[in-house]
Length: 423
Image (cartoon, rainbow, N blue to C red):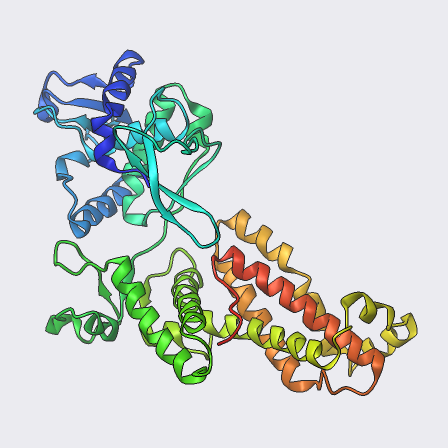
């Protein structure tokens, strides 16, 4: 977690500023409205709309970015002059961002110091930057081959300027490897805003969503949001599993809370305005994280019961139990159509992941996980898996359930979600 203040304290900007001047990427304006400012010339194609979004985003987020930082293209038809350093000597947000991206790509010949921030139960360590000394076991960061900046669409214009800055400095390959993974506004439903303790203006009460705005004092801290989600999830788990230990219930409540938030944010395509709502996100019905997680819990429950009934059961033994003739009968239409459909869907995870990568749309993986969970729940209710008397059919149903569980677990992991032991 890099901190902006250390970009200045460690003189990242000084190094970047010298490089920008040395390579002619910026120049000192000697006249006009930008007199005394260091400016960068940028292409104007398609900038006006992005510029307006950036100005609105700066105002909404309460950032110290003046309108002068996002000047309109000159009427002369020349390139737009982008202010990097104001006439009073202060560095603009974009100027610091250029220095930051030089570090990201390992082009700055400077580095942060790093200290421990948080140790996860899995053993993974989170790190935070420091300006004085590193912990002895600190790894190396930076030197990225590709960079994806996950920032909302209102920041399109400054992101374009950063990319152009890299190109102007003579780093075209790095500029091509920088992607602004833009998304639309994340807002709250009026009900959710009220639950978070915000006073909703009368004009916003009947709107479908309330925009989060630093200027209006309507900001949502991640910790507060997660704490409230976890409390609601824990209450549900406590009511369902009072016999489980407090530690077990706490772990499941945490997994549900994180899963519900992640899935809610990822199920929408990046051009969609997201209106977050606690009740909708935590629902066990419909296209939600808990619904997908519950399908994995249900599948795991099958194999837990199988181990109790037949301790020696194994996947290899199930595969040996099925003959080619028996398999042909099981999958023969029309009775076998639903089995074929589930098998094909479970086997298509790789196709959906490739599509998500190509389109840069995580929503494709989220949608796949929901469809697989939905299809498995239908399969679960339609077939008597453990009580099936035909040995070959029972083995095939178990193998299919195992395939779904494995693929669903991978999909959940890709979305940053856990498949809990119980729900």
